[in-house]
Image 1 (tube, rainbow, N blue to C red):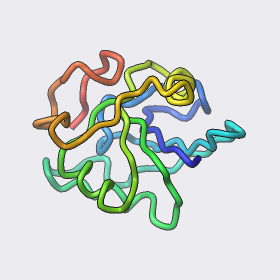
Image 2: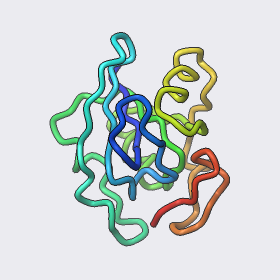
Image 3: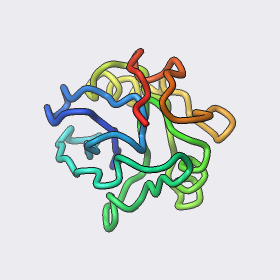
Image 4: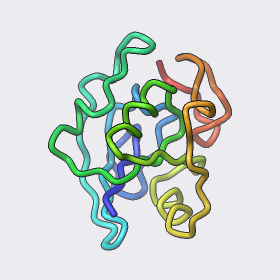
Length: 132
């Protein structure tokens, strides 16, 4: 399965999970079977609330699911309409989130469980503050 985890630095599976999907500087792409990783830059990390275009940075990539610290309702709806599942990732590193996902321990998110706004810590992302 092809997973995407928004992260704050490129350290492979030890990358720190970002507190918010849209403002993450990088997206870590992970093959859940081989644990192979690569990163993509998020050129749209700075954007107005509600203007998140989640698939722009990932154009041409096949993503089955996102493991996120936080995400807005609009972004969830856009991803779900593209057939991509979204799971809440509360661990500090991509590796721990991946392991929890593989054990079916992550909660699947829906728009009702999304962030209401940017710039606030909503208690997700391993206690990391949400970034814009």
